[in-house]
Length: 286
Image 1 (tube, rainbow, N blue to C red):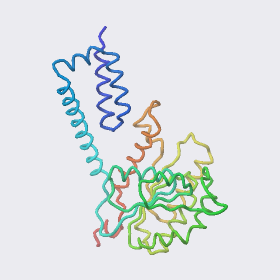
Image 2 (cartoon, rainbow, N blue to C red):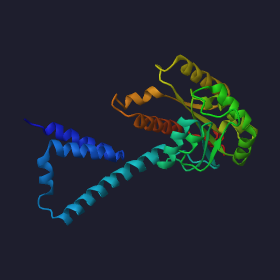
Image 3 (cartoon, helix red, strand yellow):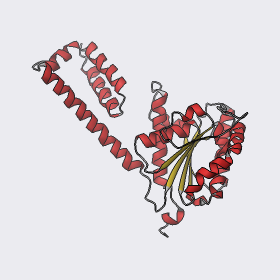
Image 4 (cartoon, one colour):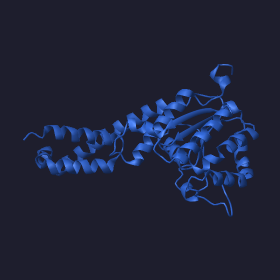
């Protein structure tokens, strides 16, 4: 029986997930490889003493790390924001936004300031940026499980404190990332208005929205559509990504974490292409 095809597929999977830094999965696949093909392990280590074997393993790890570094640098170049003469701040609104800016920082896609806003204090504990802002107060404490009216109310009681935080970004380009069906997205229009109050030009604001799958509840889909329409009516530059776009790159066996990473990359690509910078600068007037 010829198992060469299975071996080739295993090797391809090991290479692929090594590049993606899924090292736990790589380890599982390696164990599977040597369980299915025990003679390979003995053959690969033939002719090596223990020190040589260790050096060979180190060499393989170094090669894999170099490949990972190469692909991450390609991503950074691809997702880099257009150059601008003013400061840029990326603001996450809710958990989906937080997942995005965490990845943007970890992968060093954007060289800008970050601010995480949420009504869920436990969510903010997972923020990679030290700059966080908890909205809500006594009697209005998250999480709100998709209730946008409560998200809006939480923003209202925290408006003054957040205004002070945003005042230093008067002349900045602003990118806001949110799940259009999430609770805190109910405060999105208020956040945009607050940006304008502190002097941020409306042409400098870009909003990235994640839209729910079509099979999610009718209420969530309607909420998301309403939020998207509201923001567009404010003449804001909107980049909307449907969650279903991840299905082009995933199958049923894909874990949710990897699917979210795919969506984040799609969002980063779209924002980089559209350019989150002032319209005057896009037109070469500054």
